[in-house]
Length: 37
Image (cartoon, rainbow, N blue to C red; front, side, top):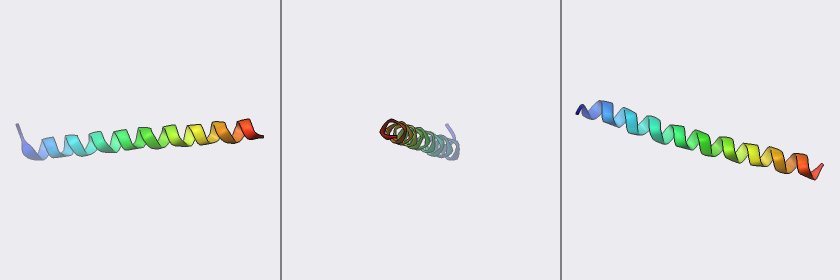
């Protein structure tokens, strides 16, 4: 198993998860704003 490839895979995986978390946060924020109006 190539170590650099593994490192890139782990880095991409964490970035992907962080992106999904941010998207969820922004979506809930938008929903909250729309429900308040």
